[in-house]
Length: 310
Image 1: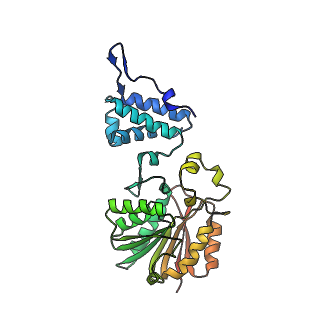
Image 2: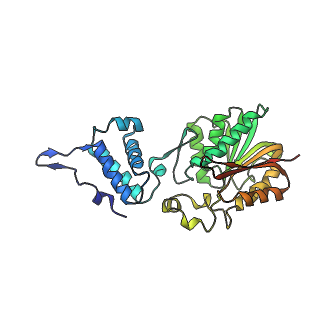
Image 3: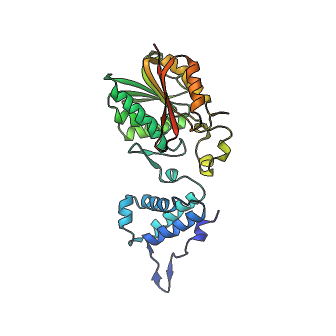
């Protein structure tokens, strides 16, 4: 991969007593070309703009309106640094430290997986199901909380809900707590460090209305084929789900029987080719009914749901 500083125009400093100036649009175009040459083809222009907007701490719209303005030397240097990180494969969300999910902005870094748009299908379905129920108060467990984007989005969208969010990673939980504080839902989202539901209070057994989870579901065979930015920067523990990608799903269905009340909802994100096997696992659990597969906006299998029997 080419060195960013060697690929950019060497236009800093002065020449014949004239100070060089860098227009916003020219810097974007330069970065776009480098990103495209590095293989970022479909989103090279957008990424170049997002990284410069973040460098300048302005909105995307304001950046576009400022195309003919000029960058200062420090701003230029910082932008070069961010583009260089992207050229080394680092995801944009880790460079900016922010990612939008469900219309909310979350703090993101390498402590947790970057939220994906397809996971919004999971949250939207849970919100729809809870809003259609007659319960005034809902108790939800989020298994594999990561950055907290699912738990916090549910708290923001369901004011009557209390969320118990669990993750095996202490680092991920520390990030999730920061996000909960930023969104002012810390009083309604409790965080626990542990394996599945083992760290939850015993009093919650049989009293939960919803268990929601986006567990690791990339198969062992799929993992080496993931793009390098995912493999090299995002936590492996949040991605790999075993030989068929459903190791955690099997365990979640087992503990869900203990913690869900009768008629309560289990909703889990799965890979697009895992629906048939996931349904078999849920049927073999023998404690679930009304099993469904929910498609994401691209028409792919994305979420499996079931309700706890009496």
